[in-house]
Length: 283
Image (tube, rainbow, N blue to C red; front, side, top):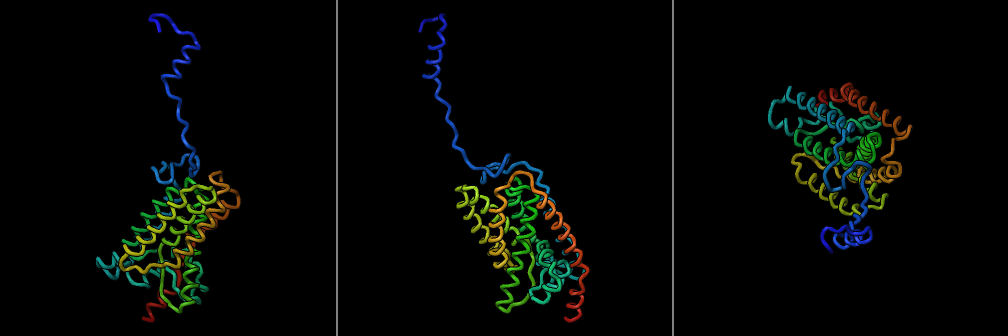
């Protein structure tokens, strides 16, 4: 190469090829939808209206439950345990007696928003934020609402069937059945999309179930709701993967609106139910 003499176009291009390596084309990886980050990477900055609405409503119910418990049992223990079973039933907990479930079936929904104390509530809401911040951008807000309410109710329905089979009675409540439903939702979504990360996600699900089983002192783990919620969530994930993240359909929006109204109605009906007063009178 001689100084102060321009190279010809061909020579210039040849020199650039020798000196500048060809750009590497990144491997195409499946994502959870436009704007979503990789599955195990940084969460996308989304408005997440349904996640926020579920979180706010569940926290509101939890605060009401703690306030009601403190009105007759002002103690630190009540803060962590959520009071007695009747207090939980008054807020919307599910009574595992088939005849009572038939009389008040809306408790299958209301129980998803009731918890046994501050620790139970905090753990579930941390799980909610972790899971729904990933799922909502992937499938859309309408589909997330449908999956959350439906899998939570289906999980409790499985609990009723299991307890009827074993002859056990009691009460149950909590968002964990719905949260396992969202885990199943993501798992079904990845399976339907042919994303190999379903294996890692399945491992996270196992870890999540272990955490719920051993870091929740004083709360009886509802494995029936977890398993049934997870299985039903997989079905929702497979069903919703085809259309997501395109805008939801008319029937999906109509169903989501009905479920949202059903959630609010179930919590109102819990407070209007005569069952808590009957139980207090019998004790």
